[in-house]
Length: 330
Image: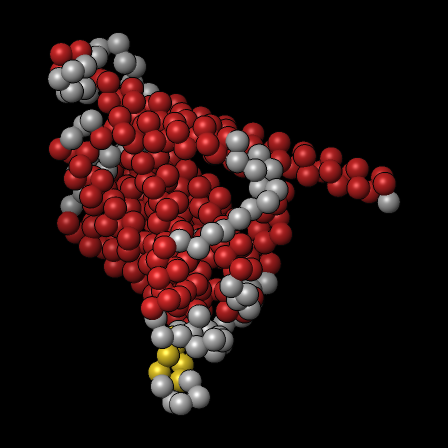
């Protein structure tokens, strides 16, 4: 697949305008969005993502469109898992609901910039060293096993080194000033508000999540253009999804199970691909291993959709049974 510089330029300009427009809207009128508003925005972003998939189908072919859709769906699902931590951070730092939109958006923009750098580095490493697939695959399988036993009953957030450093070093006031990043103290000196710490917490936490999601999408496609666009479209709807789901997050009881299945599948796929392209001298004499099967994008997309659909249905059934039991007791 060949992506021209013209296509890259147009895509970056359009996505940049989308992000800028979102930032302007949030800055002009900070508020807690209604369910209807969030539903419209989330529907609009999903529609845009699917339309872009159709554009890829017409211009780059069905294989590219399938890889993009599988990557977007995987990233979007993993982003939902991120929301659990975002909820905890917002509660931990006591951010007013009407200012949470701006915090989320700035955090997402920072994360997109960092992920763009990660994508470039990952693509360069894979193009030169096929053994990187072994590392990515093994890490995803490890993450899947760890995630399968993850419980949301008592979610926790611990401040990382960068957040603790910011608290200790940066000149800050002791209270927020609406959604401002800086303000003046009683002596008229310019100081950061505690909001800077929240931005750092959101940004660094999402980068940690990227350590899972980026290897996963590299397991579905090795095309930087498809990886980048799938990541951007998945994250652009994250802010509205945060408010739309809200208290419904705890009802997604089996989300971790579904995500662990997806990550384990992609991890195995990466290892098989590494075996098929093997050049490690201590494994099979540095020759590719012919018996390693190739898993096409159609199979990958089916497994991802199937696992997530079953996860959603099982979660809804459990939520309904729990509500029925509570209702019968009352």
